[in-house]
Amino acid sequence: RGEPASDLPRELTLHVGSSAVPVTVRPLGEDTARLRLGTSLPLRVGDGALLRDPGRHSIPAGVIVLDVRPPRLTRRGAAAARDEELREADAAGELRRRGLIRRSELLAMGVTPPADPVTGDWLADPDHWATLRERLGAVVEEHAARHPLDPGLPLEAARQALGLPDRSLVEALSAQSPGLRYSEGRLYGSQARPTLPPRIAAAVEAVRADLAQQPFRAPEAGRLAELGLDAKLLAAAEAAGAL
Image 1 (cartoon, rainbow, N blue to C red):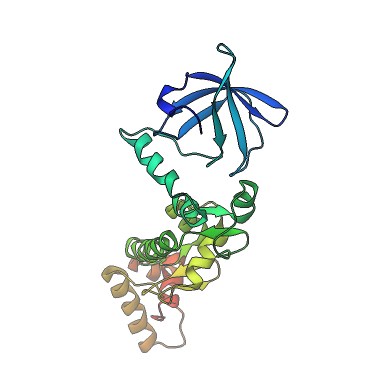
Image 2: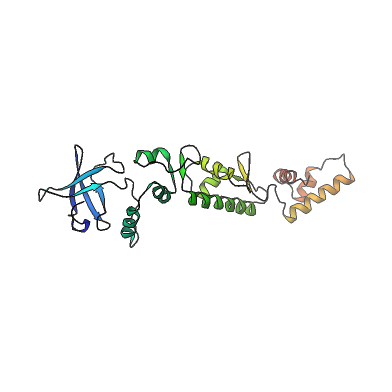
C-alpha cells in the first residue's frame, strides 16, 4: 500500500508495534519488495507494518508480511518470479515451495498447515513426497547393484543420499513403498538376498562338492583359503542360501 515498490528509497525504517528497525528495500514487483532487516523481529505472515522515510519525514508505504523465511534470489529473473509466487501465496504454495518443513515451524511463521504430517512433526508437499519415494527406490536398487554381497542399504545412507533432515522421513517413505522391505536397519528392494559373483559362486560350489563327498568333514582353513573364501564371503554365501 502506498508508493510503487520501485519508487521506494533503498533505506527506510520499518515500524511494527513499538519496534522501529532500519531496513534495506529490494523491489520485486509493482507492489512487492524484499526487506532486509537490520535487527531480527518475530514477524508472522499477515502482520501489518509501516515503512517510514526518516529523511523526508514521511510514510511512503504500508506493509503486509507475506513471507518471513524467503528464498535466496540468485538467478536472473528470480525477483520477478518470486513476485508472481507471492501474488498467489497460500499455505499449500508455501509447503510446495519448501518441500519439507516441520509443522511447528509453519505455525510459527503464521501459516496454517494445509495437510497432516507424513511422520512426527514433518509436513511434505505431495508431489515432492512422491518424487522422494521414487528416488528412494532407485537409490536402494543402485546400492544393491554396486554391492551384490551386501544389498541392504542402511537407513542413514539412504537419508544422506536423499538429503533428508531426519531419518524418520526415510522410514515413512519406505513404509509407503510396496517394493521396499525394511529389516534390521536396512532397506531391500528387488534383491532381498546377496548375489554371489561368478568366482565366489564357483568356489562355494567346490565346497558343496567337497561336502557331498565327505559330509561329516568340515572344510579346512587351507582349503577355504585355496578357494579364496573368507569369513565374510562364507556369511554372504549362507545368507544367499548357497551354503
